[in-house]
Image (cartoon, rainbow, N blue to C red; front, side, top):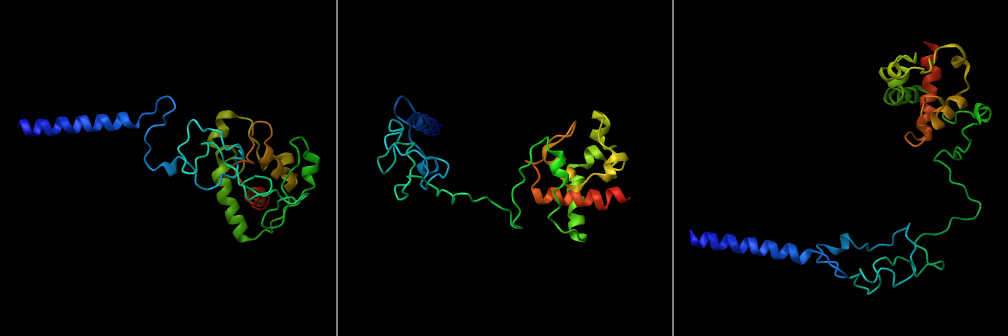
Length: 208
């Protein structure tokens, strides 16, 4: 029994010493398990710190530089990523430019055409996206009678009045930036998916 107690006591002491040795204090960062998980080996593209002494008080890097130093000496600009070619603008896989119309520019939005050709697959995908993102407010039939819509009130009936004649670009713009009680969904739904929802609303919801 005494032997078991002794082994138990040694184990407790060992665990305690291990925990103490890992604690950081002052300029000592503590013992680290797998230090490469804490200290990035590759260049961080969004970190541009050319000062080799930056974070030296915290560092235990193998190259002897400061903890926060992160700059690519092989790049002429000392950066970790290349500057894009001047005047270049990113496009999506279809070659479409980013949507840049401002929130209030509904007139300009009305002139924007849907870049995605409609077919059965696009409508099927649009329906899935509509159910996922829109039906809770607008209802499965687009009449503004979704569960959330009934609670907050004032949700657009997509089959009613002026909504029937809204241009596709207008609907896309409202999905992107929001309007009235509807919040912006541009950060939640990619542009091509937003256009598919527009196709579904125009081709299915508003023709039923």
